[in-house]
Length: 322
View 1 (tube, rainbow, N blue to C red):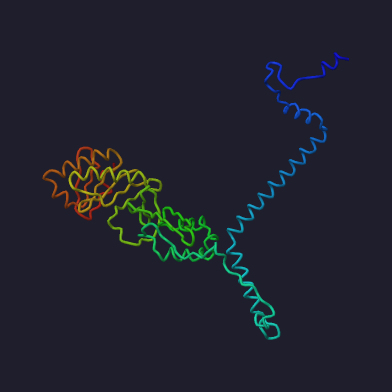
View 2: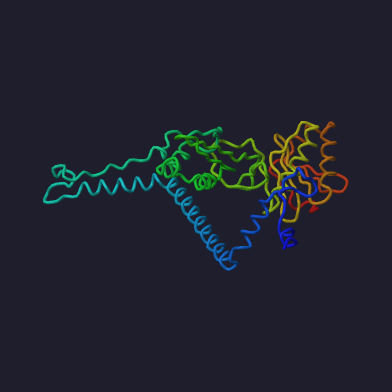
């Protein structure tokens, strides 16, 4: 009996050190967990998970509803105000509903303060090709929804449909300002008969708002815009050595090049060795032949060891096919 009592008893202090109390908290927690019914514990966990899912779903719905209300509050308020005005104008027995002795007090719906009407549109970039009237006319369809109801993405897309607009950005500035930044197309050359070439060497078609006769006219098959522009820049660098500049440059379907100089003749370079042929002309132009070459109509450089000079208005299409 004394042996059983001795094994059943214990001390509150750790055997390793008599002055160190034993922490019984983990032991009590383990006993409580072991005393639970395993099946009941699993059911409680499932119920807890279901409750958590419902709570999360409710939070998502509340958040989405709040976002929709903030976005379209002004539109809803405007619609309600229109319906109330229509109701007030109804007649009962020849008397308008709003005038029946004050018996019916119709509520007044006003645009909420947070969705103020847009009072200021700030264009943060200079406009040269795009006119203020175009921007103002376009904004009239968007500002009716108020500060929050305006769809900035749709407005930006609408601005970029203007052929003179390379890119646009639209942002709201609290409480009632709309800031617009427009990057216009910058034409660097005339392309063909109707198009323009921008800085990215891409063609675009837009109505001319100002004279652009100072730009060079480039011509070529579809898809050769970048090639022709590169050739124009290369040829111009060479010609500046004798103070000449290109007015127009063209390449045909066969790859034959021809150019016209400002205050100078037209040059036919053909398809082969165009750089060598142009250098030959520059060398001769720097000599005593400068004056007759400047007064020529066409200089045909499609010869192996020389060139021909034609008077103005004389065609050389049939001469030296290469």
